Image 1 (cartoon, rainbow, N blue to C red):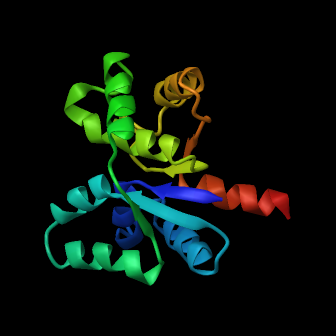
Image 2: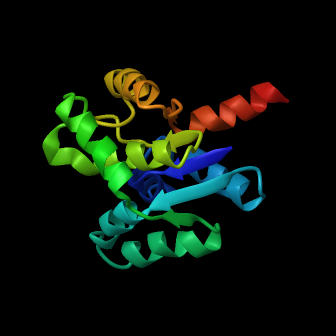
Length: 157
C-alpha cells in the first residue's frame, strides 16, 4: 500500500502519551520492512519545521530512517485543495489539511494517515473529498489512523 503520512504521524511517533503512539511506531516499522511505501509532502515538512528542537530534528530524521518520499506541491494539488475549501469541506484557515488530502489524491496513493480528527480524519471530510475526487477523476483515498491499517493487515492474513 502507498501511504501518505500527514504531519500528526510524525508527532505521534514521539508522543508516548497519545493512544496512537504504539500503532504509529509499529506502522513505521512495517514501512521499514517494505510492507508499505511511505510518502509525505513539502507542506508536512513546513509544518514539522515549526516544531521546537530537539523534536523538530528527530521528526525530520524519520524521513531518512524510513525512506519516506517527499512529494512536491503542484498546481493540480493546490487547485484540488482550493476546491475542498470552496466546497466548505476544509476551513480556509486550515488549507494545509486539505492540501494533504489533495496531494495524496493526485499522486494516486491509497491512504492518508492522520490523527487530525478536527479537519482530516472525520466523517464529513472522508465523504465529501471522496465525492469530489470521484467527480474530478481521482480515485477515492482512505483517510484513517495507523491502527486501522495495522488491523486491516491482521484481517488479511
